[in-house]
Every structure is written in structure tokens, then in C-alpha cells.
Image (tube, rainbow, N blue to C red; front, side):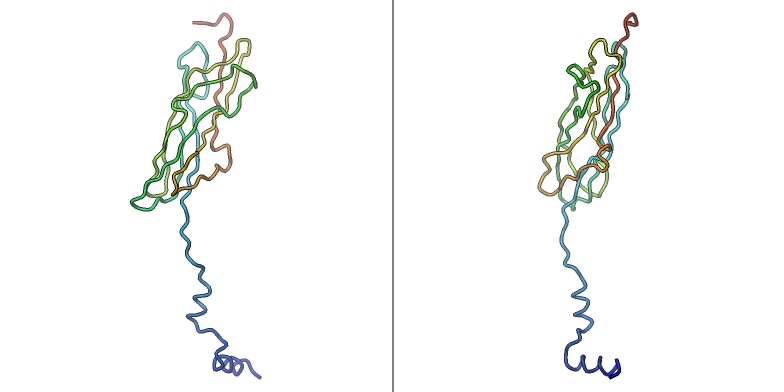
Length: 172
């Protein structure tokens, strides 16, 4: 039996789908997706602080990327900034962050929201010439219409502050 005759018999018998049925089966159902938000970059200025010299503070700038938030909708997430790790790993290597937690509002087209925090009161124990603090920005407590995705790579959410101790005999 040739192929044309077989196809004709299948069509007459109702075993072959018509083109509308075939298209319906090929399309996957449309499922609305929840927009995501993530820390996309963290910068620090200045990157080094010399204790006993101005400035003894720095500014952390955090870029937060979000997908399209549907029109008329506003979402929120909390931004947290703090110490991730210190070198050396000992008490006395620290800094304060203002604010350490802040609410961020997300709306509109996909894009970036920029928030800042001040780093102050850096400390490095006496007798240690240089200390470092890896500062980490993270997101928490999203409103119901948005989900948090972790930064990829994780280093996108980090910046390193170097603190130089005042050398003996080099005060102001």
C-alpha cells in the first residue's frame, strides 16, 4: 500500500488529527511567573580606610535587579548589609552599617534599583597593620508578588573594605 493511500484511509477513519488539534497539543499552557529580584552588584567607595585619617567612613552602593512588576503593582523586599567575613578572624575587626536593614520598593519595567548604606566606625585591633572586611548585601522578606534569587556568582553581592591601622609614630 502506498503512503498516500494509507494517509487517505487514516483521514477517512478519523485517526489523524486535523491541524487545529495538532496545534492545540503543541502549545504548552501559559502559566504566569512570579517576578524575581536579586542583588546584582555591590560597590564600595573608598575601598580602603586608614584609621586616624579622613575619611574614616565609606559608602556601600547596592544594585538590585528585578524583573517586570505588573502594571499597578508594587512589591517590596528588605535589603540587609553587614559583615560576611573578616581577616584576621578575631574580635575587634568590625564596622557599623547605617542603615543595616532597609525596605526597598520595586515597580515597573525590569531594571535596577540602587540603594546605599554608610560604613562607619571601622576597627582593626592594635598591633595588626591591616584588616579586611568582606561586606555582603542580601535580600529578605519579599512581598507575596516577588521571589528572591541568590546572586550568581555570589561575589556579585560582596565588596571588600581594607582597614589600615595607624602605624606607631605616624599619628596626626
